[in-house]
Image 1: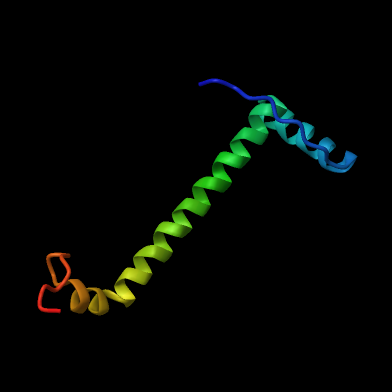
Image 2: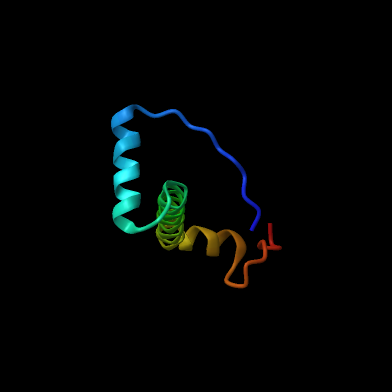
Length: 77
């Protein structure tokens, strides 16, 4: 996978914490930040899927009424 350089500015305390956490995990600061972002986006994606599933459950009857059970728009309208 191709890598892109990303420059960010953080306060010294945050930078120190990132270096310490990366060292404790035995990874580079780059890898540590990359893992944090990947985890965060994965959780957000999962939350979206769960919210979409809840929405579909809640409004299933409306969709069935509008489009029928086979998903096609009711041709009687």
